[in-house]
Length: 177
Image 1 (cartoon, rainbow, N blue to C red):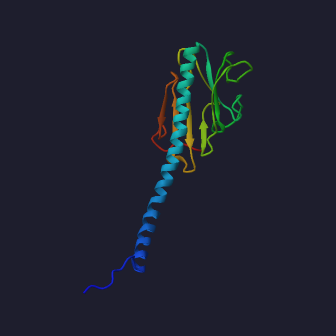
Image 2 (image 1 turned 90 degrees about the horizontal axis):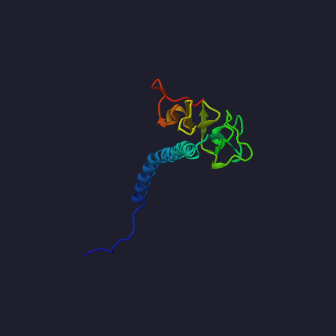
Image 3 (image 1 turned 120 degrees about the horizontal axis):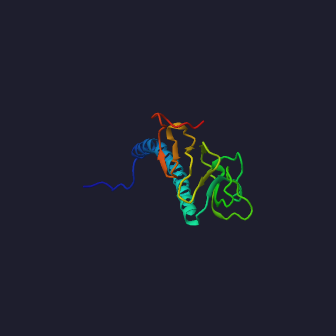
């Protein structure tokens, strides 16, 4: 004869399940953090790459100079402002260098601030000519709280073509300082 049927689990079974769940969560949480940080950094790098391609194509389309500059307010270039505060693309009608957005110069696009990190740059502004060239090389290094090991750089050649790097020219980590 069979005894009464039990529904449910014993305390020991529940404690074992919680221990396994805790171990898996402890292993997975750092991975989720890395994924989140990588996604945020990649989004910003891709946004900046898109801005470079847009400025370059607008310069060709308008047959004039189109510039990028840091702009915390989204309306004018701010000398000395960090790139992570946001940047703008505008038609630089007077072709000034370093680029300054004057009254009457059309604003092409505004990019918001990146609060998740810092963008170090070798240039205060970047301008593209009608034939697609920037005329100067530039490096923009995107660093988050993980530092140099997780940094990415957008390098713009004199021909105006950008590329992404995860190492310095010597093969080491990128500089975030």
